[in-house]
Image (cartoon, rainbow, N blue to C red; front, side, top):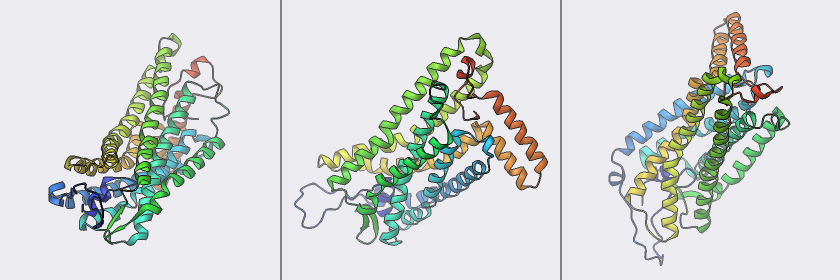
Amino acid sequence: MASSAEMALSGITSEYEYDYPMNSTDEIPVYTPSEAELLPMSKIYIPVLYIIMFLTGSLGNLFVIMVIGKRHKKSGRLVDTFVLNLALADLVFVLTLPMWAVSARYDEWPFGEALCKISSFIIAVNRFSNIFFLTCMSVDRYLAVVRLMDSRFLRNSSCAQITCGIVWMVSFILGSPSLVYRRLINETVCSEDSESSFVQGMNLLTIFLTFLLPVLILGLCYGSILVNLRRLSHNPANTRTDARRRHSVKIVFAIISAFLISWLPFNSFKAIHVVLLISNRVPNEVIHRGLVLSCCLAFLNSCVNPAIYFFLDQHFRSRASMLCLSCLGQNDQAHQSYITSNSFSNGTSETCSGNTSTRGRLFSLTQKE
């Protein structure tokens, strides 16, 4: 049977098992690669990667929560509500990584079945909530840039908070099968019943809900945004927004690229893996290795979001600087920094009074709403 480390890495909400019961009537040959055959030295570098992700992800997301949580109501942006919830989901997830690091290092799950179920449930909820919040941010940007005047009644703090509540509720419901179908195999491996038709169906549904459908929505939203910005760029009244428009495109590209790079390989391997199981075929060594490595890449997505905010969001950097100065006791300088960033944001962002030029203001997390 594949090691517990391999199983822990092979799927976010589900892992795989290839041994069949002794009394099974299945005539499928069992492929059970050894640790050395699957990925040499994986017991060393995978735990190290997990610990690095734990440290960077916990510190980064905690910093994002502190910066956004300290914001003034007048300086808050609507998109910050989604960013805050996304950072919270990522923070809770990365806190489980030390357990998976130990499991990968010692080739077993020593924490008992209860923590096996709970940690798998947290990973499942994070997978759903992460992409759902990212999708909500994309829809909000579409409404802000393309449908500003038509969506004023939707784009308010109350609607954003209700949407976040719905996202959490749906994520908890969709992640709940992990509490039922996750268990300890041979009292050492935290895995699931991969032969269950329900589990296989949930795996395919998860791929659709957490990748295919969101990618479609992201493509439609950002495609409309870019078309709208390109159309407005021909308007002489908007020539002064060209530099900011280029900046907004960088943010769009960074967010979409981070998501696709992190999740495309894993979802591709996972889809192939499930299809092979459904067709009563045994996944080969390439699929095993692909699942292990692509899973590490998918986990990395929870660590890169804070970096995107910090390096590409001028408004976030200004508020972070203000928080740091405030912690150092330099309140006057922090207040001046806040005024400066507030003036910058007002000068570069859309307002809700909205004339034609205002509606042409760009998609950017630097917008103040």
